[in-house]
Length: 244
Image (cartoon, rainbow, N blue to C red; front, side, top):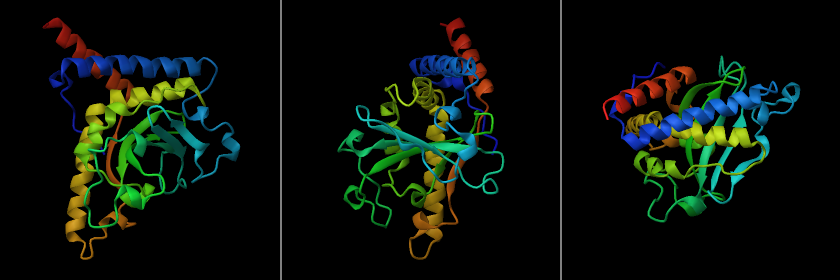
């Protein structure tokens, strides 16, 4: 899906400046890894020959217990996701969610107490065979089986996502945190599109089971081009600076 171009110059100045910094961090992490022939995906998948679909990488996920941020990498069978090697799922754990932010009323069991380890699924980042990000997407509730938070509440949690630990890979963790900031406007759009998709599906569902409908897996998706995004962000920042 080709994304609608964003007018980055309309973003708040501090948001755009943070995106510039995030772009620099993303490139630096990839540069350092490239110096030793490594990649973002290679930081969690140590042995590509034994890489198994559906398994979580790394084992036990990456969890920052101070910021309550979490992510893991996994893959679907190739025929299900042509052109994709796998994808990262990003979450914010319940302990990092303010009490004022509660799961949405979606007609099915969705309270925090209904889940063993409740988390808010933020988004997924699809990667290609070369370890480059190619798309951002959101999923239906059944995919990760976590509480469903509406778009506005999920967006309010984005600034809290930060993997500020060294293991299993500092470059990977910095990259992951920076990607959320670099694509913050896109993530907001994706989350609103996700809600629109699911609201429409739920209205057409006679028994209110859209959130458990296995035929709806990806709720919203945007293809991305990392180099183009960084160039666009830097160009927008230059425009803002020239008119300051």
